[in-house]
View: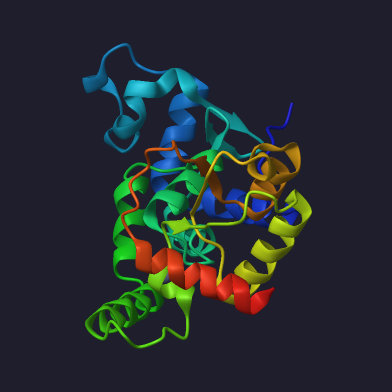
Length: 231
Ligand SMILES: [Zn+2]
């Protein structure tokens, strides 16, 4: 049985080749195939980081897995981080995406650091700060103002799901896909069509309770203006 990695065949081949050149992963593979020592202290030091979850580790066609997640050789980690952060989604979204199919020791902090030093995200952030200092200036990129992690959308309750999705698609295509979309509990958001849209475009959809604090009225207004312009 070959485990499934959501990647192209050439990418999987790449992981296989780089695994063969990765000293730690070769030691790990030998340890897995020969059986783990009973005690942690008898484990080869390069395999020690994996000792606590040794039962989850398998080898399939020269690729190591932790559960369903492929263990990525050191030389491919930057490449993988670029991929999970390709649309400059926030740390939470990038980590979620990575955790679905990738693993390496320290992946969480590697990805966090990688995104914290991302030049594109920094530029985006500076722009937001600048705009906050000039409150009456009309933002030319409302999405930047709303932020990449959170976007609040306010639509008329009577709007049909198709219309909402069409409007959002146009907005996302123009300003980028946010990590999270918060909406009210309107029917157009609770339907299957919207859930499918969220899966396809890879954002989290949360519905707010009626008491959800209106913390960022200005951002909301910015999105509204964008929606009006695009409609
Ligand atoms: Zn970025």
